[in-house]
Image (cartoon, rainbow, N blue to C red; front, side):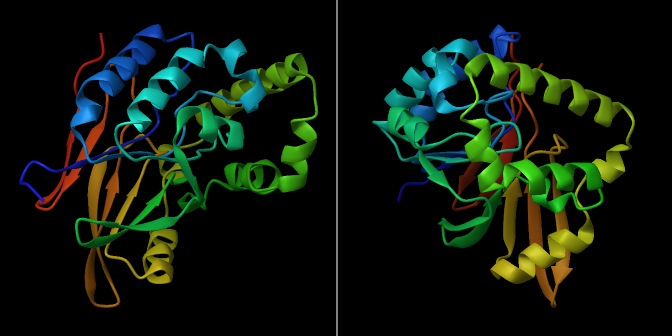
Length: 246
C-alpha cells in the first residue's frame, strides 16, 4: 500500500433538479477526484428524495446513475441508504454498480474497524423522526405498498413528505435533531469499534468519547450546498475538505 492510498466517504448531497450546481459538481467529482481513490462510500441522502428505482428518469437521476456506473467500473463503490433515499433498491444497485450495504455496517478501514451508518438512527430524541423510521423507513410492508402506487401518486406523496419535513425542522431545536450521547455509546458498544462515520445531521465535526475505558471517535460528514464535504480516510487518519460548489 502506498502513502497516497485513500478512500472517499461522502453523504447528504440531496441531489435534485432544483440544485443543478450540486449535481454538476458531483458528476465532475466522479469523473476526476474519485478515480484516485481506492474505494468510495456514500452514506445516504444522495438524493433529495427517491420514490423507487423505476421513477429515476422522472427526477432527473439518469445522468447521475450513468456517472456512478462509470466510477464503479474503476473502483469499489458502496451505498448506505438515508432517510431521503431509503427506497433505493436492487435495480439501482445493478445500474450503478454500487453495492448496497445495510445501515450500521462495520468495515475494516486501513486496519481500523469502523462503523458506517447514515446517522438518523442515533437521533433518538427526535421522536417524530423515529416514528417516521418505524412506520416507513424500516417497514417492509409500507415500502411494498408504496411502490405499488402510480409514479404520479408517489411524487405527490414525496412532495408532501418534504413539506412536512421542512415544517418539522422549523419547529424543533437543532439539539433535539442531533444524535444523543446514549445512542452513540450504545452503537460503539454494540459493534465493538473505536471509530464511527456518519452523516444526516449536516453538522460536520469530530467528536471524542471514552467508552468502557477506551478512546473512541465519531466523525460526522457535512451536507453539500455552497460547499461539498469530502472525507479522505487513509493509514494516517481521517480528514475532511470542503471545496466550494459553484
